[in-house]
Image (cartoon, rainbow, N blue to C red; front, side, top):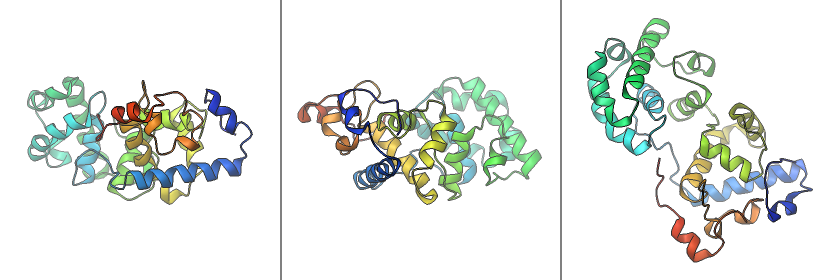
Length: 245
């Protein structure tokens, strides 16, 4: 039984078996798939390199802001070599709207150099290679693998981790442990879309501070559904039609 949930609703799931947990987890994912049929990565990209760079830049800012910045960036720097050879001041000026622009410019230049030196300028399609690149951890690597290469992966960002615990899918806090624990509940082929479903739900309904439980399509299967706004009308006003970040 997964732990880490709270509230009176949790008592309903106190004696849940492993089989029951798997069935409940997959039912939740099916409902969220129907709720968010257009769920996808919310960073704009056309190539693995563009997605890799956009994901690195998305730290501590919003996807909306990244998407507003990357058209200029991608036109100016179309390949790894151009990042590796970039003038830091020119790159910083483009990245200024994202915040931490000096650090991000340095990270992107380092990324370009590493790709040129180790992988002939191409983004590798294996987790063990991606995580050796500067600024690239498992979360970023799984975003790229799942969305640019079609390799299933679970992306544990703040939204995914929060929902995995609220839904009682795991009690783990460490992102790698969350990734493995939740991954064991689903077929590998479902991992990438599962990530999108939970992230979209976390951005739109299951907010960190005030979840819209009264408007949640999976509330009946959630051990934490007594944490947020219960009134359906009031909860509906909390629902966002698009993700804020």
